Image (cartoon, rainbow, N blue to C red; front, side):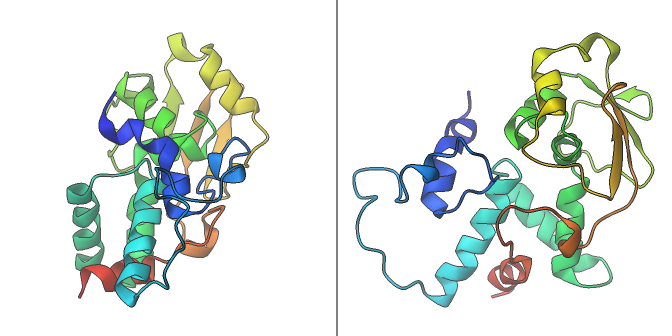
Length: 205
C-alpha cells in the first residue's frame, strides 16, 4: 500500500472536515488533528493558509491526488476557455475513478481508483485501467461481466449514503452507466463546501 493510500484515514482529521460525508469518519469521534500535537489550540489561518486548505480539501476528496498531477489539472483549466475554477471541477469530475465513485460502483474514491487499476471497468466497450482517464460526454462506462457480482460492487450500488448526480445515469442491475455532461460546481454533490476559486488563487500567486 502506498503512503498516499495509507494516509486516507488521517485526511479528515487533518483538514477538520468529514470530507466524504461518511458516518464512519474518525472526525465524528475526534474533532482534532492526528498525532500527539493534534489537540493544540489552532491559530487564525492566514490568506495563504486558507488557500492551501482549499487545495488540500479538493485534492483529498478525489483520492488525495498527487501535487504534480493536480497542478497539471490547474494548468489545463487555465488553458481552456471560461471560468478557471469551473474548468478545474469539470476536469476532476471527468476522471474515470471519480465517475465510478459517482455512479456508486465503489464505496470510496480510493476503492474506485483500485477498481479501475485492477481492470474491472470498460469505457465504450474497451477496458481502461487508468484512473485519471478523462471520460467524455455520452461515454458508456460498464463493470466487466466477470466483476459484476463482486461483493464490493454490490455493496456500493446498494448503499444509501449518497445518490447518483444528475449529470450521469446508471443502471445498477446491469452495472452500466452513461456520463451525460460535465457539471458545474453547483451540480457536484460535495458533502463539504469546496472553493476552487481559492485553489486558483493559490496557484496564481
